[in-house]
Image (cartoon, rainbow, N blue to C red; front, side):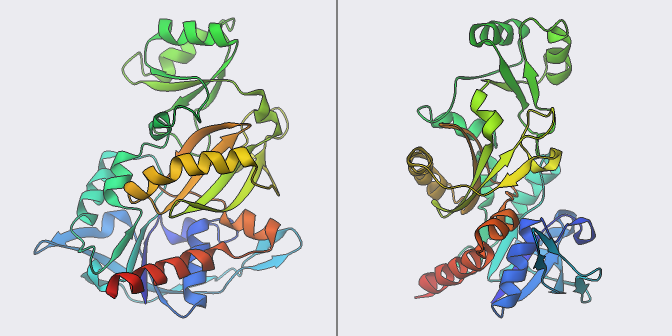
Length: 325
């Protein structure tokens, strides 16, 4: 089979951490062809989605102690070719947030792929539907107390009622722009003004969960089923557990509550074509649903001695075979 990955420039990827590389390596290792492209290299010709695609060959990472090691020349690219994306069996949309207007345009281009020929993961319609912060609001029984607003008074009243809150930009990633809020903070108004761009852009504010000190659990889901998890623990004086801001990765297990949350989320994910997803759980609460380029595979593989990328690729192959029958 042929797999295409729409990624950020490959030279910027960290093969020892990046989930896209883990899945690409798995596809190559299972005998499939792997191609890469970038979002600005897509277009539509004669009503069909096309892209400049490059065949990539990779030297797989090797686990050395508690980390993955990669060769300096870990990938090689063939000459790029302009071709229909329908010539691929699967296309993974894996560019990092934020979801900008150009990102949305790419999802419209992906709509022009014949889904009977090529599976797109995740569905472009699902990507447009699922803002990674707002999507969780539909699971009212799973999330902590949450508001979305650009109004200082509304936000202040909520935070003072809760005692403390966490502000999240709706388009953020990797912990960027997440702020701890207390009503007594003399900078409170300024924080809200900056975060909402002077009241022009709403933000999400959730009650602060003390369980965050013990970690923020990333659960990787494949077609609505949890396949692995890693706990991300804040370090030093940082209250965020995101690995991008120094959070420590720890081995973890799924609790009964975690599985209950997965069961609540699964039908919506399947409905919206969100095949590969990472949900975040703090304590007993769902906090985010990550659909654009969820990470965590490398950490889970290292801690649990598994290869989740193989599981993802095998699922795609089986899904394609079932569709062709």
